Length: 190
Image 1 (spheres, rainbow, N blue to C red):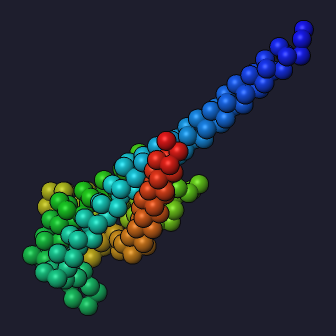
Image 2 (image 1 turned 135 degrees about the vertical axis):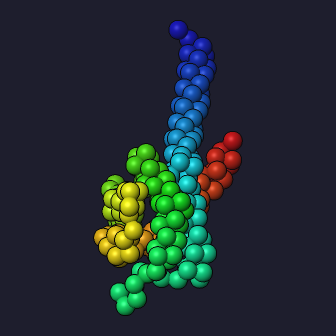
Image 3 (image 1 turned 30 degrees about the horizontal axis):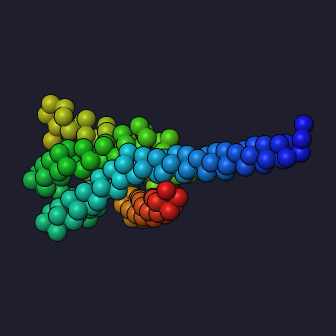
């Protein structure tokens, strides 16, 4: 073979292989970024977005309830029949349905958590809701008319709103920033 035939052929093969390799690596990088963006989008749409919205709804409902009805259960002053009925109504129809939805969201989409384990605020929320279930069930029993604190308040204590709100806000905002960053990088590469 002549050198004037082999060299151009070899150059053509090297250029084609280099172009193919560069295209392959670029497509691989794009695919990885797309997969990462898809996961972030799922985290926002299936877990952190719904949890953040549901938590905000619980918080806003509580801020409407509290100024009007105050703290129903205190050690120094027992609740009246009307106060107890109001508490049971709000817990049964407003707070517990939202709380249960949050727990269901966590359980159904735990694979989308940013952490390797379930964070403490989410564990506390799940415990709070679980500890209220027998109380709410007891309210449905025929003849229930107790005014006792233990028959109306969870053994798990208060709703963990500060810790939960801080965790959800930080997670949601961090994911939104990551989403925007990934979208911008994807746009630059196209």
